[in-house]
Image: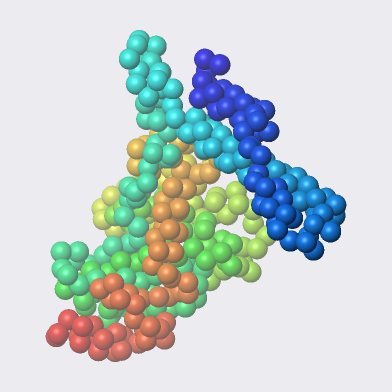
Length: 349
């Protein structure tokens, strides 16, 4: 009773209302009206016995209807009280005015602080690969999937070759390549997860990794990796990514150990509770993931990217937005010349 006083009061009220329903219903007046009709009408006086039987049945019916109506009102009132009782915190919970209440509030705050994922509702890492000049007011957003051959074609046109669009226009505008996870390519998620790991661990090699992964994409398409388990795929993609990072570092006069790079990448890919799992402690602050999660360390970023893609209503890849407006006329078959004509007009060149 002391633990849930509101609930006990509501239950008691319900029982009292049900017990006193018969006493709360006054005798209905239809009998008086029917008797008056009998006295004023000869035809009704002749049929008085049957009419009295009918009026008796009517009276019983009215009483039953009244009982049901009162019961329904009582149930609704008691249900509302129960709802309020269940949703209202006790005084100790609402206002910890004694030492025990303060300790309880402190423990609750500590629990919330130790659960970063449940408290996080904003992206801690900007989604996508950002290149070019972000200080300008011109932004071209390209939504692509590593497992999509059409995305590969468009990305290559924009970023690769002596006349790459990115090289020509990167100083005058910004480009953002957004990850799009397509569920009909089951390895799509794992490919994008590898790019998330590179983004977090080796951001300077992010563009180099995207270029290398799209260039090597045919080796990661459905038929090529069909027989691989998730663990085998992670091991293979981590080795590939490590090779790209080490090669990119060597071009920048840096040296990295490929085995160590691979091990760090696998820390973010393998779920911590699975064989080989080794949760990276820094991921808690960077992403909001934890060492006791069922999924891997980059899972929060995966959720954010998928939510971003859905909010932008992107379904097919590639999809291009220019300053926030979708450009449906742009396709993967566009040449450098077509991109040049489009961007020159957009930039008032």
